[in-house]
Length: 87
Image (cartoon, rainbow, N blue to C red; front, top):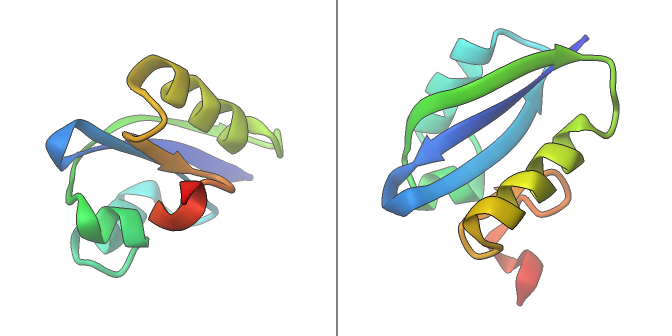
């Protein structure tokens, strides 16, 4: 089962990710710079939410939800994980 998680990052940015491992371990990887390109640019502050699920679309749905709430320039995740996704 996967865990979909949302990180609040610096500069009011958000990152949505998915892992099969412990979510706190994955959070530390993001904080140490070994997570994603986005979390290297905007350091994670805290885990906003996490949800264990077998729903293969949850990460994408959560990403799109956060993009609609906080803006497309301030959220990355799922197939929109990299900063270059919108260039």
